[in-house]
Amino acid sequence: TQSCLDAISDASALNAVVTTTADMALEMADSADARIKAGDATAMTGIPLGVKDLFCVEGVRSQAASKILDGFTPRYESTVTSKLWASGAVMLGKLNMDEFGMGSATEYSVYGSTVSPWRATGSETKLTAGGSSGGSAAAVAADLCLGATGTDTGGSIRQPAAFTGTVGLRPTYGRCSRWGIIAYASSLDQAGPMTKTVRDAAIMLGAMAGHDAKDSTSADIAVPDFEAAITGDIRGKKIGIPREYRLDGLSDAIAKQWDDGAAMLRDAGAEVVDISLPHTKYALPTYYVIAPAEASSNLSRYDGVKYGHRAKLGAGDGIDDMYEKTRAEGFGTEVQRRVMLGAYVLSAGFYDAYYRKAQRVRTLIKGDFEKVFADGIDAILTPATPSPAFALGAAAEMNPVEMYLNDVFTVTLNLAGLPGISVPSGLSADGLPLGLQLIGKPWEEGDLLNTAAALE
Ligand code: GLN
Image 1 (cartoon, rainbow, N blue to C red):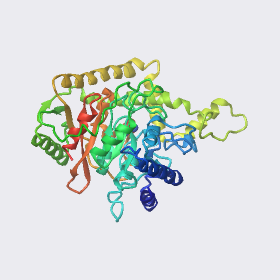
Image 2 (image 1 turned 120 degrees about the vertical axis):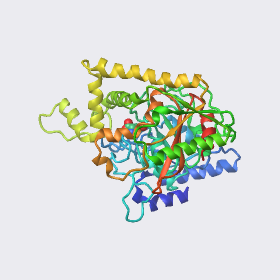
Image 3 (image 1 turned 90 degrees about the horizontal axis):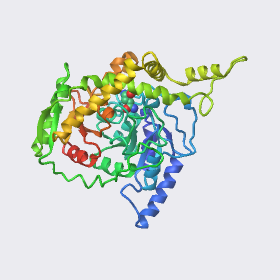
Image 4 (image 1 turned 90 degrees about the vertical axis):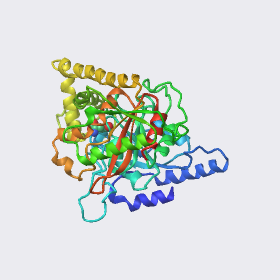
């Protein structure tokens, strides 16, 4: 714990950790020590972790990297973090992210951008650590913590993991409780572990997962021993390569890592087959209708009354002025864009044309996966991202749609509620990390982790 705290203060230039809870960490480390001595430890006892700023941690500033939650200090603890602390893990601090989880570069943050530890020193252009869980990815990659929590609504665990050479697991929807995690898009949000290795992800998921009466969408399904599922044996597994993911213009480096990954799985005894997920091309537009729609509803609670920022009001300002000014000042540009987009697709005149249609397409996308799994496919292999990490600052120059294209390989499984993992798969020609994605069957994270371990 102390060496992580030292590393955090040495790495302040990365801007990965936005609140350090040193006193809390040392106290928790002492209790972990006592617990280990008493012979009552779990695999997580004494493990120092970072927590994405989206998770409410009691008594610690938790503001989803937004000005609108300025100084918000919850008096309650998210279920996922309370489970981690109960297992003996140590809280090091809160990690940077895109405001409310909306973004792919951790540049839309009230705390400023996170810098990837890759090429962080030297005169070359700095790189993004991805987003929205960019602070988590950078902290794990730079050894500021041994693991971090992330959330994944459309790729926010897997894309930053791919950009930083770390492992990111998004579990099946309902595997981890969403209670106490600040909501972005409730039907898509899911918490998961970000770690250095697949085995660490298995151990950490075991400590995060489980049914919670406080989240009606958390599933009452037993949490198996995910670590024990990593046997190293994937003989006879059937891995699908979806042809629709071979996009026009896919770079040679990405195509090659994909082929190499397929070859590794084949060499380990898996059968690799071509499959079709015909509605793939509709996933991105469907996601960017549904996610903003849910966000516009979830974010309506930030009105300047209940918590966080309230705009200064002039004489004669009424309650509507208070709402308007507070929301105009408190939300960043991207969040405002999503709220407007969401309100538009949910509005009476456009609901059928956009929102209802997107819900129907979502069902078709889910059906594509159900069909290939019913045909005997155990997991699906794709690239995690269409490119390696891009330059920091590029987000400001991209138009929003260019930024959304980053999520082309990741959003499909969120729409279908499936688990997915990004595993480091070597370096691009210019020496930047790449990641491969494996998509698994619902509730089969153990099997998914076992297959992922064969790619390490
Ligand atoms: N980049 C995606 C978005 O902005 C994914 C975000 C996420 O998974 N939280 O919506």
